[in-house]
Length: 109
Image 1 (cartoon, rainbow, N blue to C red):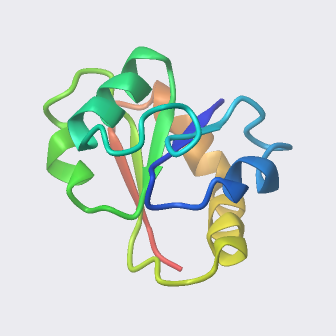
Image 2: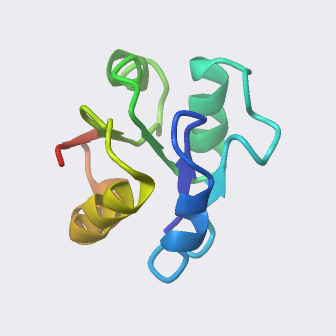
């Protein structure tokens, strides 16, 4: 299970969640910064990532891209360690997303 953290989220999440999601990446560190939402989501879908973002624009976009899986952290104006805790609390739900017909999970603090 691997996550791709959108450029709206700190790259520190890769390290903070390495034990649960060891193959995760940050869009800020892998050349996807400023390439646009569609390109980031296409990359995530093509490479088997679940995209994690704070951007609600990914909700309608996910329906346009086959195999796209997205986790949106709603109202994420909180510190990175809190975002990591939210993702940890929901790790099972996130891990089930690839096998689900759902494309989107919305998480609140």
